[in-house]
Length: 376
Image (cartoon, rainbow, N blue to C red; front, top):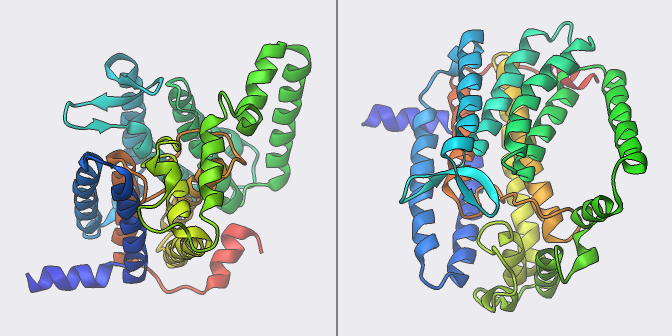
């Protein structure tokens, strides 16, 4: 028992862990303030316990086996196969066929597919780092991301599809791929969209796209949720209304306050000061992930940590953007805070993998990583 405890103590990044705990608790406290029957609160407690168990268990694994091509390809094909199986066996929720319903609980495979995409891209870029500036690596890596992107998009789950895109785009930027080639592809995509907008899209299609991009332009229809969310955030002011006194949430004006809009519910209760503290905690989490990236034994470990930090930041930016009316409402959760077992398990699985990689970290100067991955 002593050996196990000593192993846990040595492998876990405790600064990261203790920064996570207040975030998880903030989600529980906010949820408990509004959920009358306590059903979601009790389930979330169970999911947190399971996720933490996975986190600590994975810290004992040696993940160098993930560097093997056949292992990564097998994981990727399995993940893609699970996404395909949704079309025949999945359940529809909120208009999307993105869940497996097992009676007592549901499972959303797209959350874990994001981690798989990070693993695949980390493997691909780590093997081709010397010649990474070649144009074909943008195309090949894009295909690896495009397959799950399409399978998730057609569910339809636009939010998860966008996270997969941002993971690919972010890892492209840090991997050393030629920025000129990447810029050329972005220009080509922009031109293609412009042509479609001018010559193909009908007026009603343009109206739908504009409403989706700027939901507050239709606050009585598609933008109602975003409008109520911005009211909740603004009404918190500096110090907040106090725990359990968020009127937008308690009076059910704010929808999905335990999942998509839990940030708004938190901001209404805790105010600007509470939001700053929450951002500081997320900043510590991302900082520790990047610190572990600096000490990765190989490019694979470093790229996985960088990819996972992009995963966390993408979720945060998109969710907060939609909570304050700047981005479309896409159903993206707040990491470690929103209700839901699938995303919690995926997030703690990613962190557990990073803890396992700490077993064989190397001591390396920061400038080496900067020169290799950021082109400085």
